[in-house]
Image 1 (spheres, rainbow, N blue to C red):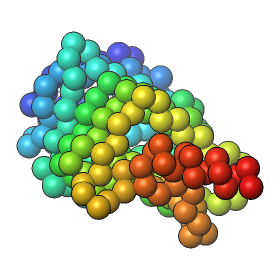
Image 2 (tube, rainbow, N blue to C red):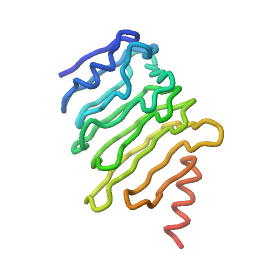
Image 3 (tube, one colour):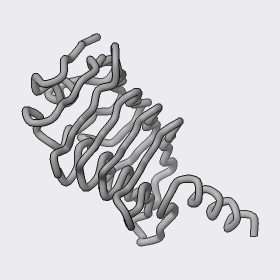
Image 4 (cartoon, rainbow, N blue to C red):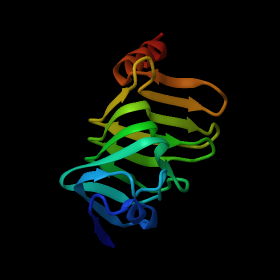
Length: 171
């Protein structure tokens, strides 16, 4: 199935109703007051911008996007911006993620741009952040990826975190 949504009409609902194999195209504009956050994404859904940048204004929400279920097939979000929330994208402990792709996504004015607590013991956890910008508020983390064991894999700005991670692996 293919669906389209327009800004300002509560079309986050179209995202929560999408099923595996669906493509949802979002018109440029601001999505905010009529949305119910968090918008819970399902496995196998592709969400893309169509004619301009869709901007999800969280208006101080705790989380704008989260997962409704384990991700067992590629799920992709591309070309959108999230602002003004505690977390733009949050993966809670207990979720298995095998193929989440964020492509050309921007998060600003949020305490956390991307937060994931991955369950230890799962065979594979795969998250791809491609050409994304995560800007935390002053003094906060842009990206935090942790394990349920309490180990923090990445904490801070993406570039610094990747450099630190590479240094730790090589030593």
